[in-house]
Amino acid sequence: QVQFVESGGGLVQAGGSLRLSCAASGSTFTFNIEVMGWFRQGPGKQREWVATIGSGGDPYYANFVKGRFTISRDNAKNTVYLQMNSLKPDDTAVYYCDTAKSGAWLHYWGQGTQVTVSS
Image 1: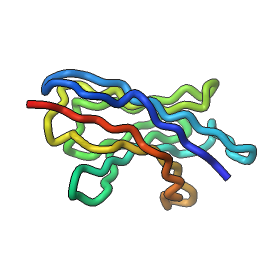
Image 2: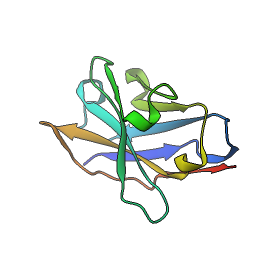
Image 3: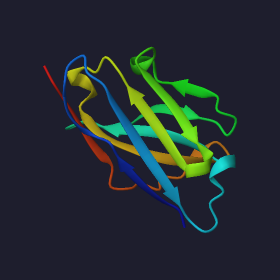
């Protein structure tokens, strides 16, 4: 079983920045070869995909965060990051990380980290 612990959220004004972290653990989880991603769920909204990073570090982003968010990973620390710049009130959500296998997200949801952007 794999566990994710997200952190780094908080309250920030529009235009500000935050850096989220997701630490992965699990005896059978080989972090450095796994695809990792970030999702978010805003108030009253469905959970949505935000960004993905492949085992080789190749990033992919949802259109609504392109140019503002950067996903990265530190394999030595089993941690994936999400640098969020130019934040907007619409970015207010609980942010979660997840991993994928054979092209499907596994939904190993942690507790998430709350991001609140004030206008």
